[in-house]
Amino acid sequence: MIQLSECRVTDRVIVKNEGQLMEGTILEVNHDDKQVCVLTNEQQEFWYPLEEIFPIVLNDQELARLKFQEEAQDNGERLFVRGPFSVKFYGNDRLELVYRDETRDIQGPITVHQLQNHYERMTKVHLE
Image (cartoon, rainbow, N blue to C red; front, side):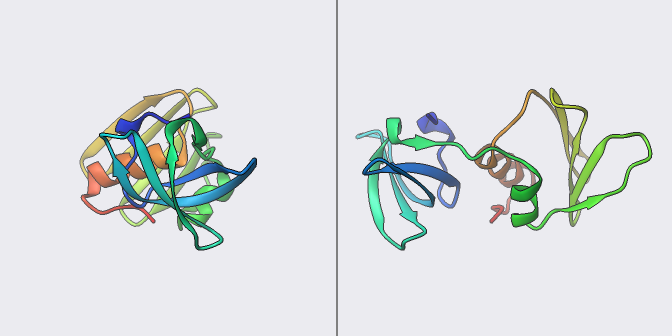
């Protein structure tokens, strides 16, 4: 489950729709009713309660979908770059986000919507 405070328009999430898990994009957030409107891959908009919204695990495939390119590193660390923004993995328990002169050290793994939110706060542009 995702916290409502983490939900931003255009974030990618997974929703539970009639027992099936489907990927979608957040279109709107209703803070009063604690619901999120999501457009699924089947091009259907629907309001979901928070219990039916789940994060997408951030992995190599998701970074590629977000147009990050992996760059070879000699020290065994993994670096993914998209323009002036980079994501560097230090094992499974730490990563570093860098945009120009701003650096964020993150402990533990993060999800796609969390990366999208960090990217937006750092660059002022949403990551799609």
